[in-house]
Amino acid sequence: MAKKNQTLGEFIIENQASFKYTSGELSRLINSIRLAAKVVNHEVNKAGLVDIIGAAGETNIQGEDQQKLDVYANDKFIQTLTNRNIVCGIASEEEDDFIIVNSQDENHQNKYVVLIDPLDGSSNIDVNVSVGTIFSVYRRVTPVGTPVKLEDFLQKGSEQVAAGYVVYGTSTMLVYTTGDGVNGFTLNPAIGTFYLSHPNIQFPEDGKIYSVNEGNYIHFPIGVKKYIKYCQEEEGDRPYTSRYIGSLVSDFHRNMIKGGIYMYPKSSKNSNGKLRLLYECNPMAFLAEQAKGKASDGFNRIMEVQPTELHQRIPFFCGSKNMVEKAEEFMREYSE
Ligand code: P6P
Image (cartoon, rainbow, N blue to C red; front, side, top):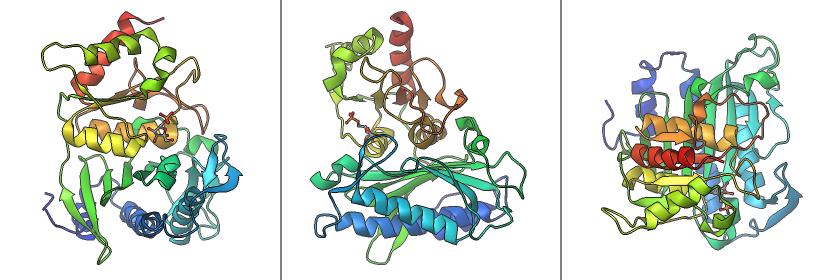
């Protein structure tokens, strides 16, 4: 049972036995995420002071300007996971293709693959708005002893063994699940230790916050437009409050604590929405369901979608169960 103020290290050791694949490898994996999070946090927190913000002059496969911190965070997480010889493969939102880890794991004996969005919301960096890291862990499906293949990464979200995020906000938190609930750890920067601050976080079944970029309103499907108007009507506990930070991790985190729904629907501009299934939607969906919330593409459970490519996008509705179900009702009623 999680005890407040337990350190992340103590929590991992105490709960390792309850993890069905008790091999210690996953514990070491979470520990390496912890280390990389502290290193990245240090840089994010001083972004305004050193010449590390501003575009790195390159663009990633998504065609987005890579901020220097994007590149830095990507390198740090890949380096930490590789050097500690914990995983057999890594896929990053910032990398065109997946990485076969054979520098240390030359016999490909490791069992886990990690998919990561190293710095989500990075367009917020140079305006001092919180950003986050999102990670997702699977057991490989191809034979141990051989190099990982694309199919090791194209697994349904329901196959995840762990998922989580780091939110670099007013405080830095690591929030993750291994399938037995969601726990949040807050970093004490003075001593570099994460402490259990939010044990067993759960989405309130209902909420009064909706998060969507209403600048895209005219491009949304009718069902989304109808749901947004529903949120704005004077009726019962409505109108709801509109809160949109433009950083998925921050909007998700606030909604999980207070109750709310986050939506990134498809639009006439983005036929599959903007968010990536593997690096953003599946890990956040795993967390949402473990926190008694819900995550769908507006019609179907996100974690049942069979991925077909590394960087595929998908419409995303995630948050308090009753709010997501209400939005799905409108999507069905007005499906085009
Ligand atoms: P828009 C950040 O780029 C991100 O992937 C999410 O973190 C965020 O919620 C969304 O995109 C913001 O996108 O189009 O509203 O600026």
